[in-house]
Image: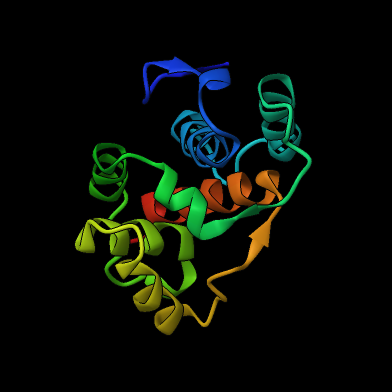
Length: 142
């Protein structure tokens, strides 16, 4: 798979980056809500074909820290979550990371806002799907 927003293949990304990037990119291709019934299958296919560790849990905070700030800035600009922060934890984490521009400073702010443990681990497919849903929600919120 090719990550248009990163101008590189999914294989060149870490699994932590790839989970976020493929969730976001599938959301931009989704025209009708709630999207295809096979969304999870599509995300699994992209991750499994390009990431050998697609079936191992990853740390949420490491996934956010692996993204470069330019990518986070594009993501936050495209999906503003001012009134949806608590129901869009991945986008909220990205916005807090961008606000502090630090690898660690944003984490305590995020934990206090969401009560999500800073050491939480998640399957890459679940992270990709969560961001996919968050992006769809933000795009369709009035």
